[in-house]
Length: 440
Image: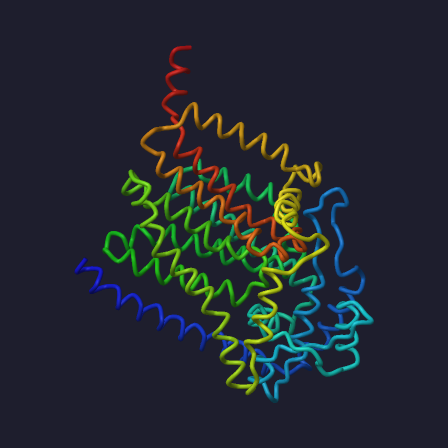
């Protein structure tokens, strides 16, 4: 208890310092790219606007696959915002995140009018940081949007290969399988075709790679706790900074799942309570980083613009939680789950009834685990099971958002596949099958 009383204030000060530092860095980075003259991106913005106008704001790459929907609506708004940055008033421009909008046209056409007509912004989108502009606006000085899609796709492919290698080196070949299997089920191949889907994936991968290579090093130096706190808090903050509320839980759950595997390798999880205690510090750090990033933006916007930025942001947050869609009452919750399950490959062929084959597979796996589980790993398996459920809790809490945008929110289930894979890898008795082979 004495040790906790001594270290807790230090950790709290560390987290508060990190949050303040990250907020200043995030704002500074956006202001820096806002200073880039619009003339330097004009040609590539015109080519990008033409490219976006070739397709509807929403379209499917595969007509038979509901999970192949590409969202150019959000991409057009993002480009519209970065184009409308005023380099003569960068700070105010960054805080407002305004863009040109008319209700008579779709967002692709609005972007085209803004770019070709040099029309001023007339609608604010201040509740998000739109931090990906830090990457996109410099890239647009020498690349068009299709070229940026290709570049980001190549970067993600290389990062994923680095993740597979890192997992193999630190945990063996078995944990590589859930990563590969999950990427197929969640149709990662479609992600590079939309900026909106992109940002959580590299954040998730980079965070996990740093964890895999850094944890044992800091554990030997008895500095694992501050390492985890810094890593997860920074990861949560960067997620809120870059993401457009898509699959944010990936950057928490996937690194957390691998951390549990690493810590179990060094010190087996024997009690459920002890395992939960291991996950609480990094989990709380991620939540602190993620949740603090939003009000920090609203507070800065309120101070700089001398307007109440909290009202509009909180009103939209309420809509995502409580808003109704084309269904009312309790039905929206099971239908939200079914729509997200219905996008998983290859279960999308069953549409809204995808839960039937998925439930069959899950029950089959549960039966297999019941027959061949290792008794001394039940606590570990139980913790992975709780982590596996988190994306579905998120779907229900933000039912309005997850129902309308199931075509990209469903990829949060990638973390569930990882956790289910780890339950089988660490929870089943491989020795049983070795004995069977020997008898034969």
